[in-house]
Length: 171
Image (tube, rainbow, N blue to C red; front, top):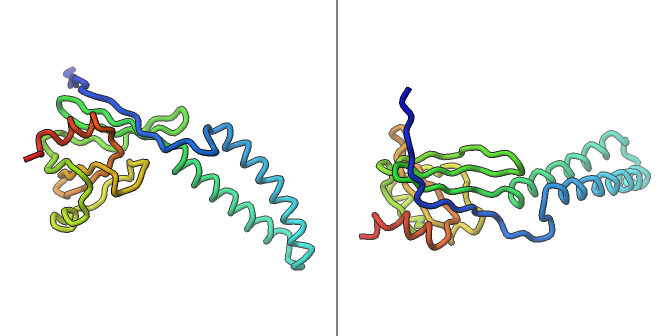
């Protein structure tokens, strides 16, 4: 049995800026408080608008679930970027779970540099999975081939990782 051995060059974790909700526990506490507020608000709206209770509660709980998912997905999700001597890996970190989102062999990378929307259109790239935590304009972009299709990954890389990734494509 032959295993591929990768030599790790650099690893970085990119996480969104921690604002009001700093952990999954805070999210759950906020959702419980939200559920209690929805019960009160639902009873109040039901009395004022003379709507069926099932309809009011379903709409309000749907909004609460959507808000919880949005917070979990965009405020509590971080990404680990790992550059090795053979490939670049992106792993999504949500709480205690880890999921490999992208694995790009270095020989498949055609461009690595600052985000450039014109280059995306010029090369006819499809966007890969969303693996950034900041603004799109501040990201590092990788263009690579995957099964004959050009894809682009936008990363929230720090200066050290950005330097190591973009070094071969500077000229």
